[in-house]
Length: 145
Image 1 (cartoon, helix red, strand yellow):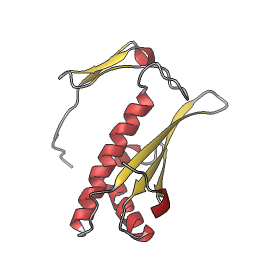
Image 2: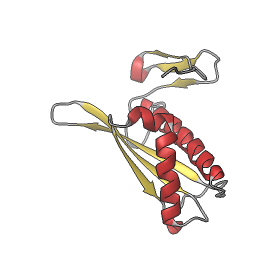
Image 3: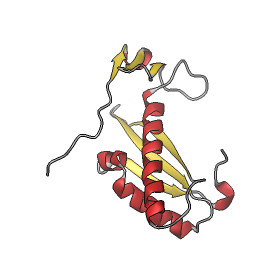
Image 4: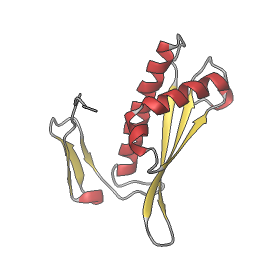
């Protein structure tokens, strides 16, 4: 199958987890810090991954919804990215995508989320490599803007 490149991002890391990252266009220029709960000393790679995954998945969700005639303007996707370590000190990521589509039933939101999971490039890249759970927010749990 021949792939056509649509876009290539160029970001350089200086100093690893305790350095900084900068994109070639200067739009991204962030100090990095080690991941920890509570106070941070900079953005960490898990937050950057969560930002990218949630935005990409949300775009796929909205595209699927639009194709099915479902209003998803107030939808939201929150990515919870966990950095896990096993007894051998091997690190692995896991993700919970929390999806809220106000005005739809839980079943309809799940169908949209499952279809988006098949379309999203992040989902395709992670499939079979890390655990990704799709969690549909109940109406009472739906995050506020």
